[in-house]
Length: 140
Image (cartoon, rainbow, N blue to C red; front, side):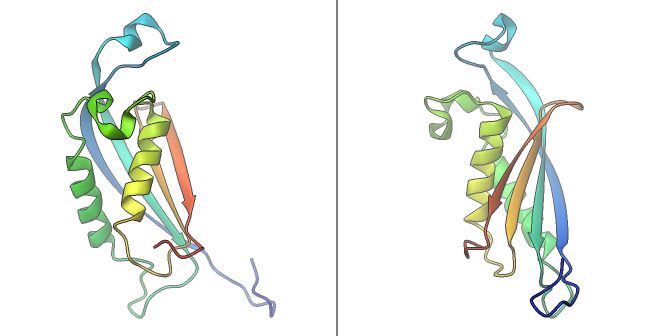
Protein backbone atom coordinates (compact mmCIF):
# COMPACT_ATOMS: atom_id res chain seq x y z
CA UNK A 1 0.00 0.00 0.00
CA UNK A 2 1.30 3.49 -0.84
CA UNK A 3 0.41 6.88 0.57
CA UNK A 4 -0.85 9.79 -1.58
CA UNK A 5 2.74 10.64 -2.60
CA UNK A 6 3.58 7.09 -3.69
CA UNK A 7 5.70 6.16 -0.66
CA UNK A 8 5.36 2.69 0.82
CA UNK A 9 2.91 2.59 3.70
CA UNK A 10 3.42 -0.25 6.15
CA UNK A 11 0.68 -1.92 8.13
CA UNK A 12 1.38 -3.49 11.52
CA UNK A 13 -0.53 -6.14 13.44
CA UNK A 14 0.09 -7.44 16.95
CA UNK A 15 -1.75 -10.26 18.68
CA UNK A 16 -2.24 -11.41 22.25
CA UNK A 17 -3.93 -14.64 23.35
CA UNK A 18 -5.83 -15.58 26.47
CA UNK A 19 -8.20 -18.35 27.45
CA UNK A 20 -11.18 -19.11 29.59
CA UNK A 21 -13.44 -21.99 30.42
CA UNK A 22 -17.14 -21.16 30.29
CA UNK A 23 -20.38 -22.99 29.82
CA UNK A 24 -23.20 -22.45 27.38
CA UNK A 25 -26.07 -24.17 25.64
CA UNK A 26 -27.55 -23.32 22.29
CA UNK A 27 -31.14 -22.27 21.74
CA UNK A 28 -33.31 -22.69 18.67
CA UNK A 29 -32.25 -25.03 15.91
CA UNK A 30 -29.23 -26.95 17.14
CA UNK A 31 -28.21 -30.57 17.64
CA UNK A 32 -29.80 -31.95 20.81
CA UNK A 33 -26.43 -32.37 22.57
CA UNK A 34 -25.64 -28.67 21.98
CA UNK A 35 -28.90 -27.70 23.71
CA UNK A 36 -27.59 -29.18 26.96
CA UNK A 37 -25.26 -27.12 29.18
CA UNK A 38 -21.64 -27.94 28.39
CA UNK A 39 -18.21 -26.34 28.78
CA UNK A 40 -15.60 -25.15 26.34
CA UNK A 41 -12.03 -24.10 26.85
CA UNK A 42 -12.11 -21.01 24.66
CA UNK A 43 -8.90 -19.55 23.29
CA UNK A 44 -9.26 -15.84 22.58
CA UNK A 45 -6.86 -13.93 20.34
CA UNK A 46 -6.85 -10.15 20.14
CA UNK A 47 -5.44 -8.69 16.92
CA UNK A 48 -4.72 -4.96 16.68
CA UNK A 49 -3.87 -3.24 13.40
CA UNK A 50 -2.47 0.14 12.55
CA UNK A 51 -0.14 2.12 10.29
CA UNK A 52 1.82 4.19 12.82
CA UNK A 53 4.18 3.13 15.60
CA UNK A 54 4.64 5.20 18.73
CA UNK A 55 7.90 6.87 19.78
CA UNK A 56 9.09 3.59 21.32
CA UNK A 57 8.56 1.70 18.05
CA UNK A 58 5.41 -0.10 19.24
CA UNK A 59 1.96 -0.24 17.74
CA UNK A 60 0.58 -0.66 21.27
CA UNK A 61 1.86 -1.79 24.64
CA UNK A 62 1.15 -5.54 24.51
CA UNK A 63 1.43 -5.85 28.29
CA UNK A 64 -1.44 -3.35 28.54
CA UNK A 65 -3.48 -5.33 26.00
CA UNK A 66 -2.78 -8.57 27.87
CA UNK A 67 -3.87 -7.04 31.18
CA UNK A 68 -7.12 -5.71 29.68
CA UNK A 69 -7.81 -9.03 27.97
CA UNK A 70 -7.24 -11.02 31.17
CA UNK A 71 -9.46 -8.66 33.16
CA UNK A 72 -12.18 -8.92 30.53
CA UNK A 73 -12.00 -12.72 30.29
CA UNK A 74 -12.24 -12.93 34.07
CA UNK A 75 -15.80 -11.62 33.83
CA UNK A 76 -16.78 -14.67 31.76
CA UNK A 77 -14.57 -17.33 33.32
CA UNK A 78 -16.53 -20.25 34.86
CA UNK A 79 -19.86 -18.61 34.00
CA UNK A 80 -22.78 -19.88 31.94
CA UNK A 81 -22.84 -17.43 29.04
CA UNK A 82 -26.61 -17.81 28.59
CA UNK A 83 -27.13 -16.29 32.07
CA UNK A 84 -25.29 -13.06 31.24
CA UNK A 85 -27.08 -9.92 29.98
CA UNK A 86 -24.82 -9.73 26.90
CA UNK A 87 -26.34 -12.98 25.63
CA UNK A 88 -29.97 -12.35 26.52
CA UNK A 89 -32.15 -13.42 23.57
CA UNK A 90 -29.18 -14.56 21.42
CA UNK A 91 -27.37 -17.83 21.08
CA UNK A 92 -24.07 -17.70 22.98
CA UNK A 93 -22.27 -18.74 19.82
CA UNK A 94 -18.58 -18.12 19.25
CA UNK A 95 -19.58 -15.40 16.77
CA UNK A 96 -21.56 -13.56 19.44
CA UNK A 97 -18.84 -14.16 22.03
CA UNK A 98 -16.27 -12.65 19.63
CA UNK A 99 -18.51 -9.60 19.08
CA UNK A 100 -19.13 -9.10 22.80
CA UNK A 101 -15.42 -9.30 23.58
CA UNK A 102 -14.50 -7.04 20.65
CA UNK A 103 -16.95 -4.36 21.75
CA UNK A 104 -15.86 -4.54 25.38
CA UNK A 105 -12.14 -4.47 24.63
CA UNK A 106 -12.41 -1.56 22.20
CA UNK A 107 -13.91 0.47 25.04
CA UNK A 108 -10.90 -0.28 27.27
CA UNK A 109 -8.07 0.61 24.88
CA UNK A 110 -7.02 4.23 24.40
CA UNK A 111 -4.23 4.06 21.82
CA UNK A 112 -5.00 6.53 19.01
CA UNK A 113 -3.04 4.79 16.22
CA UNK A 114 -5.07 1.56 16.21
CA UNK A 115 -7.09 1.28 13.00
CA UNK A 116 -8.83 -2.05 13.66
CA UNK A 117 -9.44 -4.56 16.41
CA UNK A 118 -10.28 -8.20 15.79
CA UNK A 119 -11.14 -10.94 18.23
CA UNK A 120 -10.75 -14.57 17.19
CA UNK A 121 -12.39 -17.13 19.48
CA UNK A 122 -11.54 -20.81 19.20
CA UNK A 123 -14.16 -23.21 20.55
CA UNK A 124 -11.93 -26.18 19.73
CA UNK A 125 -8.62 -26.81 18.03
CA UNK A 126 -10.36 -26.74 14.64
CA UNK A 127 -13.26 -24.29 15.01
CA UNK A 128 -13.07 -20.52 15.41
CA UNK A 129 -14.95 -17.30 14.64
CA UNK A 130 -13.57 -13.80 14.18
CA UNK A 131 -15.20 -10.42 14.73
CA UNK A 132 -13.37 -7.35 13.38
CA UNK A 133 -14.19 -3.74 14.24
CA UNK A 134 -12.90 -0.89 12.09
CA UNK A 135 -11.67 1.81 14.47
CA UNK A 136 -10.27 4.24 11.91
CA UNK A 137 -13.14 6.57 12.81
CA UNK A 138 -11.40 7.13 16.14
CA UNK A 139 -12.87 4.66 18.68
CA UNK A 140 -9.55 3.63 20.23
